[in-house]
Amino acid sequence: MEPDLFTAAAEARQEKDPSSSPLAVRMRPRTLDEVVGQRHLLKPGSPLRRLVGEGAGGPAGASSVILWGPPGIGKTTLAHVVSQATEKRFVELSAITAGVKEVRTVIDGARRAAGGFGKETVLFLDEIHRFSKAQQDSLLPAVENRWVTLIAATTENPYFSVISPLLSRSLLLTLESLTDDDLLGLLDRALTEERGLGGAVALPEEARSHLLRIAGGDARRALTALEAAAGATLDKGEREISLETVEETVDRAAVKYDRDGDQHYDVASALIKSIRGSDVDAALHYLARMIDAGEDPRFIARRLMISASEDIGLADPTALPTAVAAAQAVAMIGFPEAALTLSHATIALALAPKSNTATTAIGAALADVRAGLAGPVPAHLRDGHYKGAAKLGHAQGYVYPHDVPGAIAAQQYAPDAVHGKRYYEPTRYGAEARYADVVEKVRERLGRPGS
Image (cartoon, rainbow, N blue to C red; front, side, top):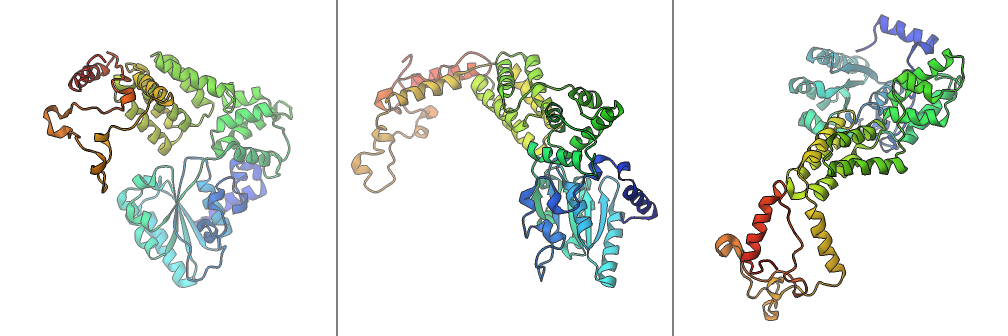
């Protein structure tokens, strides 16, 4: 809401004594140029630049925007930068505490400000996904008629959590996760700038790396942990933040895990081999190590999808859909909730019956192809749709399987060089036992049993 006397007094106190505010608040960017990351959204002429009054203006006004991304990557920060940089009236609401009444009050105030003073209003609505459909509907007339310019923030996929009419009237801006380099730049500024820690402490490499792992791409978490560690260091009369101090203050042991080195590959390998060995507890241990070290959840999900085909295959046909669904969910929700989805998939894969026949089958087929066992496609299987194909004998004699009982036509399908080869050798494990029975019957019908 708009500031009252108490809010103004609190802000005045913070201006006189910046240290009364958390470090994450003190280090908030004051201009768009100070924003960490999100360079793709801050180019000249971008919607956010236009919101703060940059650009030619003219008949094309600023657009309402929906900011979508995981926590701690700058959605609220961007809104506050706009509030400080724009000359427009800025009002903030949170969907956690506000309802239709509060929204209508803001809209009525915006219309009065526009009519009486020619002042445009920017409304920042945090956590818009928490608004019901009816509550979101209440925003439509104001956005439609540009009584307010809406900046809405959400951590959930807006295609599922925001009503279509509001989406169509706004620009959807997707924020990207902050990189380690983004966070390092932010930590360096917090350590050296007067509004931050003003050079009171130093942060050596080992402690810096642990802070990055703790942060998990979340700028707010990184600054909160840095402030706690800095305070503990100064209380000890020291000037250098040690790894031990960081571990003590955030109650989080440092994990020996280099996302670009041996540990990255060793732990990932151990995860997959534990799944292959059906040791669900070991698999969960390695998964936890990867999560706690800040591993990219998409990397973990990709490994699980590969495992589903490489080590389980048709022994449990649901394994691959489970892994794919996990990858899709991870991409949509991110950490910390993605840990639940990855655990779900890891347990399912570890306890599934195992078969590597999909792996060995394609391996054997590729080996033959690479050895030159290819040969021409049988004439009756070649394309016969173009003019002159019949004169070449193409598609002549082909038996359409649906025209015969059982829909299996006994004719040669493979080239002569590999005719009769058996690449797929099913196991009798899990659901693959059914495929073992089916493939034998099919091969008999094709006239090559036991070949």
